[in-house]
Amino acid sequence: MDYDIKDIGLAQAGQLRIEWAERSMPVLRMIRERFSKEKPLSGIVLAACLHVTTETASLVRTLAAGGAKVYVCASNPLSTQDDVAAALVSEGYNVFSIKGEDTETYYKHINACLDVKPHITMDDGADLVSCIHSQRQNLVDTILGGTEETTTGVIRLKSMAERGVLLFPVIAVNDSNTKHFFDNRYGTGQSTVDGILRATNRLMAGSWFVVAGYGWCGRGLASRAAGMGARVIITEVDPLRALEAAMDGYSVMPMAQAAPLGDFFCTVTGDRSVIREEHFKLMKDGAIVCNSGHFNVEIDIDSLEKMAVSRRVIRGFVEEFTMPDGRRIALLGEGRLINLAAAEGHPSSVMDMSFANQALASEFLVKNSSKLSKQVHKLPDHVDNEIATLKLASMGIKIDVLTPEQVEYLSSWEMGT
Image (tube, rainbow, N blue to C red):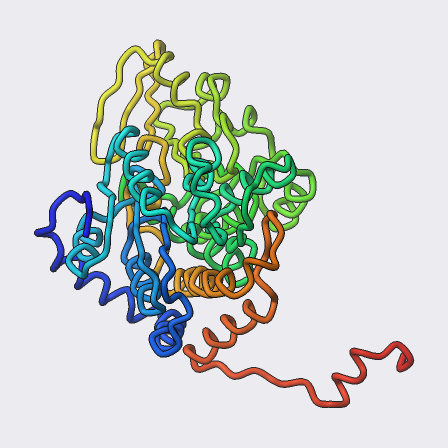
């Protein structure tokens, strides 16, 4: 066994937190029970570049129960929970992940997971796939395929596929309805607000809260901020999403117009330089800026640093930049995912469905990789429905079933009345 973590002595604390999380992950537990009997991943070496959290630990256990040899590294330098990493190592898993690791260590850990010549890659942000294609194409021959967890990674992968450079099939787990409808919306919404409040202890009620991007993550964040009493502003570049935000009751305007108003700013777009120098110049004293997109590129931190006459860490995860005119702008969590930098990420009950998709996507690749083109694929709808059905059952919720007459009506064109 090989690993690189902060402190193996944190293992007991991590095991207790994993136990707490797993109580709210019944779907993954049911899949694990089946996997332990059927061993669909027997002989598979799987490299997982994910946020190393309690929920990820439950996924790792499930993959291993299915027969996989699992190697884990972090998909973001600040997203590791060090006690969870220690707990996984104590259980015999190979983990390369330290909260706050520098860029050099981050990529060293990614390469450590690739050194084992995985059959399946499991990404959250496409860094494993990107590294393979840019530096380690010698690994491609033994790779069955990959899975991708998040919107940012899917965008990168679809770009690769469109350009004809993607060398193996990848399952876009993020595109499953039981993932993005719930994880992105309810998970990101709650955990981002949680991270902002833990970092700042500021009151949201009555504040102006600017959400950059109205995808599923933006929808969830806007809803939760409004639920806390904030007055929500949406900035968008997509006219359809902007229209939807307006119809949902939010103010919609360009970032240049929102910048002087906002008390809180949070980017969830998947693109770079969404908040830039011209916006910093317009912000009020005390404005709080953060990001909940995957990479720390959505805020132009370089410009903020160059503009400031001084900077200081005023409290945990809060760095204050003083402008030449005396205004102070606070950047949270180094511009990285604030829900994982300052908080614990998504609640386990919503990650239950996301990681059920990851587990079943791995099984799907083992069974079907030879039939899949070198493109980005969606899991079949019946898998999505299976996860939704299991989740409903775990919640004690029953739904109606179509009668034979209703099935016939929906499948015919003759019966108009």
